[in-house]
Image 1 (cartoon, rainbow, N blue to C red):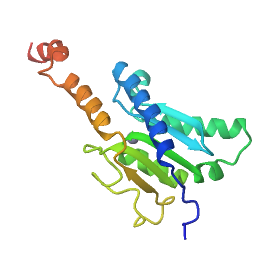
Image 2 (image 1 turned 30 degrees about the vertical axis):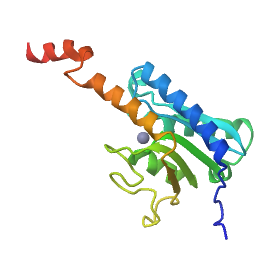
Image 3 (image 1 turned 45 degrees about the vertical axis):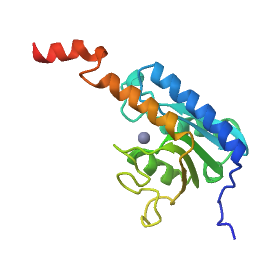
Image 4 (image 1 turned 120 degrees about the vertical axis):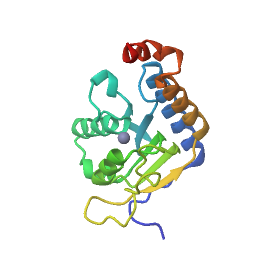
Amino acid sequence: MEAPGRQVVIAEETEAWMERAVNMAKKALENGEVPVGCLMVYNREVIGKGKNEVNKTKNATRHAEMVAIDQVIDWCHQHKKDPEEVFGHSVLYVTVEPCIMCAAALRIMKIPLVVYGCQNERFGGCGSVLDISSPILTDTGEPFQCMAGYRSEEAVEMLKTFYRQENPNAPKSKVRKKECVK
Ligand SMILES: [Zn+2]
């Protein structure tokens, strides 16, 4: 018996959605953002998508998932749909394990399933640092199911590239290092 609201994921489609999420992460990396991309899929249609926009917006909460959630809410308004019903039957495809903040937001929005690429060792909210997706938390939203490991090698590579750029030993950061030393 399938639990109510449980989403059936078709392997070939998952590949296609994750391909698009990876391409969004690539764009984020090109823009000097943490390379995370995601899509929110409802009835086999992308109704929201996002990439990390923290630096562009100078707003630390503008993670890919938060951008996508806002787009889904806009889509619901435009199509006169009930957000609770829509989120309750949507799947999130994201290149990196959602962080603690985003995992909590996904719980509150009652998204039943998250398909993701690599682990988020710094901030992961689906087991790496905390398990916000878990059924153990009872007072906030709904627990959600996770399927990990799709296109994870590419997702990790992009994160490594990004954090290398931030490394003071990397060529790009030499200026900053100089400023600090004075
Ligand atoms: Zn996040």
